[in-house]
Image (tube, rainbow, N blue to C red; front, side, top):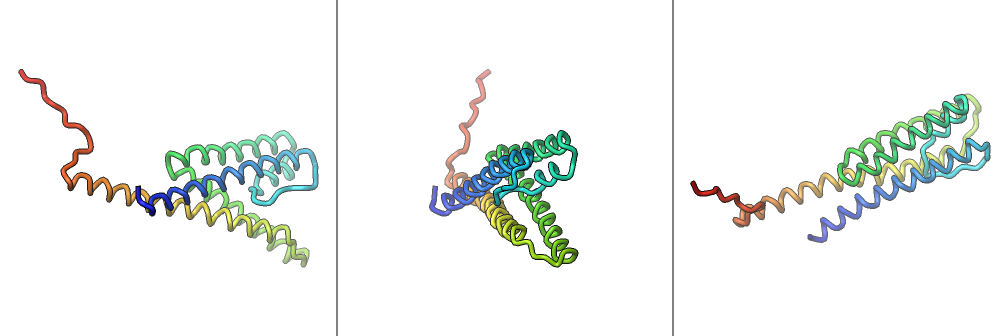
Length: 168
């Protein structure tokens, strides 16, 4: 395995670790918001928190858990397929759009710049940067694997053992 492959695999691993960290902090925030504790962590999704704050308790908590479960599924499947990371990136992009809407509302209606929203947006940008980096690295790694497989077959080294037909 060459150095470029190792670098690309590390980018995928870092993207997955960022997703896992975001899931853990989002889960902690759901617990804190459900307990009405006025402290939350950055580097987490805002949608589950809004679901708990704006919906009746049981429904909001159930929907927040489903959202976290989807993110957890994305993390799990991102090890085998990059689709998990793509779905997580889309969810965090939507989450970022919601934060941008909240920032716009606080500026236009309240004439107030909420720095916590700005910091949250910056952390979302960080998360999305690593998700997109992992997606791009996966695509490049697949190209390297295809090129390596082509080089193996060009050197007349079979990829699978040949099947011997039984004599009649």
